[in-house]
Image (cartoon, rainbow, N blue to C red; front, side, top):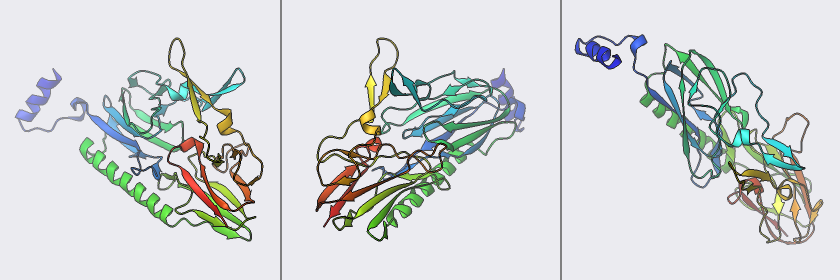
Amino acid sequence: MLVFVLATFAAWGLAVPPNVQAARTWTVIGGGGTRDLTVVLNAFYPRRLQVATGDTVTWQIEGFHNVAFLGGQKPPDLEIQEGGQTYFNPQVAFPAGGKTYDGTGYVNSGVSLDPSKPFSYSLTFTKAGSYGYLCLVHGPSMGGEIVVGDQTSGSPDSVLAAARQQQAAGVKAGQQAFASLKPDWNGYTVNVPMIGSVKDGYSILRFTPRPIVVPRGATVRWSMADPFEIHTVTFTSGAKPPDHIIPQPQQQGPPKLLVNPKATTPAGGKSYDGTGFVNSGILFPPGIPGNPPSSYSLTFTKAGTYEYVCIVHLPFMKGTVIVK
């Protein structure tokens, strides 16, 4: 019947009234970044989208993100405790809810356990209203809004084109920020900020553009200035770094995702001579309630060239300290 009505209006050259507008599918981009993942984007493009009741929104997820509508509930914790171990919360990691949304209940796209493989998630909106959502991995700063009603935001094609432009602008801002990043000396201590921007929606998954060169006895202090990510500063003295997440297969259902305590727990003391395992543990964005650690300092006592990594963002987040 709807097809007949639309065809009739088209045949007579009349505008299709809003109440019989065919349902459309809109695209929102989640994340993105440079090919080598120096710059990753922690934003949705567009952040606010107006659609009609009955329309579908498809999120193209590029990176380690999810799309979660809470329906007025409290966000689930990112991690849970079970049997003395810490696990990545399955309420965050795996899909939940149906394919439609009316503003009630909890729906979640889940995440891709291989962030290098983009995936899509679609949701049809069946009731007028304004619905906020977020990426549970990166917190409220990575959020968006779907406004459902009679008005729409142009056309799906124009919205997607604008989203790609916004995404490209975020990448450019991140590249410029990384190119100008310089460690800051204060006496015998050099401060290395790990940066990101809510305004431009990016995080930098590198420590410094070039190796850090310090004299023997100097201290390097890594400090979080990224509102989205968590990092570690880990020296393994040539050994293989521990995995951050260890999947544990189950007889039924998806695997349990163990958060490896060796990756997340501080180890090795406050100085480094090129031997042993030295780890900051997880460093968090500044300003989190409870004040978890957001900086880490290490004094270098022997000349040498020392590579280090962020266990959370292996294999691409690496750095080098050269001690003379």
